[in-house]
Length: 312
Image (cartoon, rainbow, N blue to C red; front, side, top):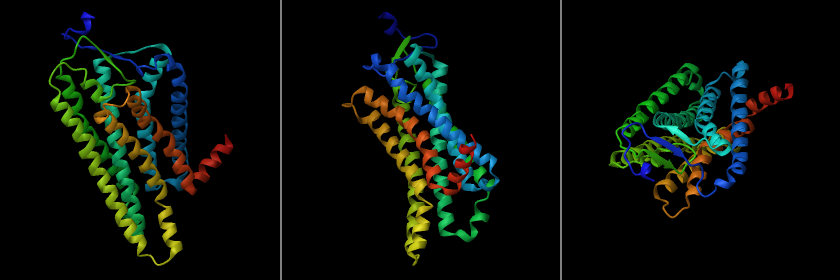
């Protein structure tokens, strides 16, 4: 026990304990986790392949969908391989550098994902509210630039997280009751003052996410206003149908993000395994559902994916 009470003079070793209280069921838990991961990889790679092969899909909306697929693959891949190693082989150790790297990429990809959803909302706004200028306002090159801006924003905002973690003192061995290095779970392991880390984490979680949600809400507010001004009921229905896929994706991502953040920070009475399940679902469920939602709702993409599936 002494090793856990001494402050580390060198880089500490973190022990990811998986799902506390359910260690005996780790093998069984790994089955749905691995299935979700495989399905998400297949679905998102399929979207990337079909859009790349079909020149008729080289449009802003599908370019954004490819960006979303890349962030989905990245987010789940940051977490799942290590989680499955814990469940299957009991490989629980992770270095300080490995832990900080995992935190950086999870949060960077998450903020990039959020920026892409904002751009998708802007895409739908232009398509419905200013359709005649759509092809001139939203070119593929402009969409690529907006995606790059979202990535740079994410990197700059998340970069302080690992730098702030670096300055904290930790015990020689830290047992983290989690399947991956979640920022607040690591901060709680420190034996120093973590006020700045906690405050900056809240800024990213609420201020930045709140800004993105506000922009998405504003876009859809203007879309609804434009749709209500259309006299034709059929035209109303057609305009709203173009938004259903994005709205469905937003609901899935927003609901899981909200529950994960709130339960981890304010749900002291909630069991630890519930926290961890929600945190993993936040990174697993959207990558599984996003390609399915767009594959079903977008007829053009659905037909092309069906064509390649039949060939296989």
